Structures are given as C-alpha cells and as structure tokens.
Image (cartoon, rainbow over all chains, first blue to last red; front, side, top):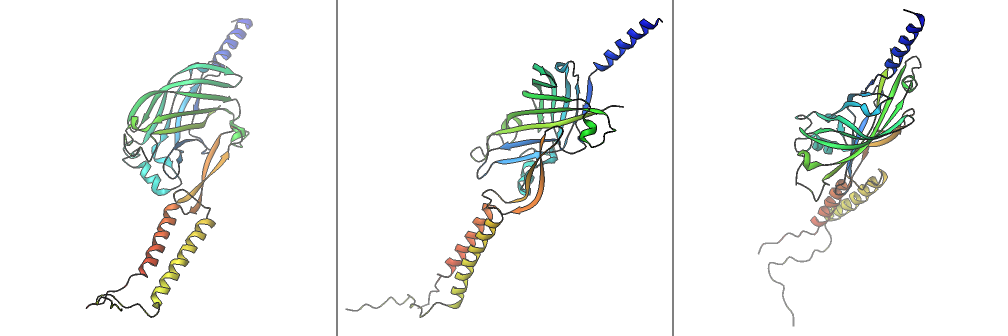
Length: 205
Length: 101
C-alpha cells in the first residue's frame, strides 16, 4: 500500500473512531447522582431524594440525536428526612419498593434536538416505569458533554475520560402508576414533581 | 330566706389540695419546656425530622445534590402531644370526688 493511501485509510479510521458513540456509566463513584421528588401535602410538602442511580447512556457528541440509553433508580434508595414517612413511601400502598425494586426510564428517541457548543437540549421520549406500570412520557432534557473532565472531577489527573451531565424535570400523576389512585387527594397532591441531575462517566483506556 | 344545698353536693374545699397544685405546676412546666425545646431545635413547623437535607454543588459538573445530616427537629405533632398532656394534667386538677349520701 502506498503511503498516501495508508495515510488516508488511517485518517478515515480515526474519523470513524472519533465519531463513534460513547457509552457513559451513570453509577457515580462520587455518589452525587440522585433523582429528587416533591409533592405538596398537608402541613408541609413531601420532598426527598432517590440516590441509587445506575444505567448507561450511549451518546455521540457529533450526533446527539442518536442518543440511546436507560436510567435505573433503586426504589429502596428513596428517602425523606422523616424515617416513618420514608417507610410509608417505600411501603406497599405507595411505591412498593420490595415488590417493584426498580424505577426506570428507557430512552426511545430524542426529539427537537438543539445543540450549542457542548450543550444539547431536547425532548426525551421514553418509557417510564414505576410500580410495574409503564407509560410513554416526554421529558425536556439538557445534556452537557464535558470532554476530558473525568480525572479532574475525581481528583485523579492520570485518569482520562469524558463526562455527560443530564438534567431533566417532569411531573407525573401518582394515580396513573397505581400509587394510591383516588385516595388522600385532599391531603397529598396527586402530582409528583421529579427532577434529575446526574452525571455519567466514560473512562478512556 | 335561706336555702340549704342539696345533700349530694360536695362542700367547697377549704384550700387547694397539694396534688392539684403539683399537677398544675407540672402542666405549666411541661408547656414551657416543650415550647422552649421546640423553639431552640429550629422552630420546625413541619413533621418531626431525624435528619436535615444539606444542599451541595459538585464543582466540575455544577450538579446540585443533597446530603443528609443527623439532626433531631421536633415537629408540630410532638408540640401538639405535649400541649394535650398539659391540658389533661391541668384538667385533672378540677375533678371533684362526689360524696355519697
């Protein structure tokens, strides 16, 4: 093979490698990832977090619209500042963390994708599963791709890799997912606000 | 013209019994103590908490996340319970024993 052809072939290979989607793992080593929930209630609002986040997202900085992935939340990691209330929320009449240990969001497609620099905004259309009930929902999301920031974040400069931050906020109706449908509506709001701010890491070999 | 009281009505006490004074003092002390403790512990007008949420920010990503710190903050239900006990203690001191015959 002539040197020119070899060079071209190498460039083509390099281009195809850089354009490949990157797989980001959302099990955060720093334990920062969490979904936050908020619902109005008598006396005071019920607000808490679910920190057991895992899952993977495949993201191509050159083609954000092709993003795929699944985020999993461990239902037993859901907690509020009152242990009795935490027990009730995890119990059978609420999310039933023992019977349905995972809350998931599986991305089907990204719509209305707009990218500016390292930030992409889009509507994430996906299958949201809570307490065994799956519904297709649309969540406005913001994805921020932070190239070569993994080592800096973990205070390990020798570690090479990228980060992907996903932010999203949406509202669900608890009755739609079998959570006390039609019950205690005068005491606890029927709507649950959920917000997500999570980071995935993709170490480079 | 004079009227005689019914036979089953008890005579007015000459003074207040010691246990009544004690119970009233106890009720007052409990009311003051519970209010002072609730105020000092953070004036929490919600339910009782055993932890408080502390917001922090991850430097590189800018993600706001919550950590939990052990902290007991009595809520309105404990204040209400203390208030109920105070009222009950105070009310007991007004109970009069009926004399037979």
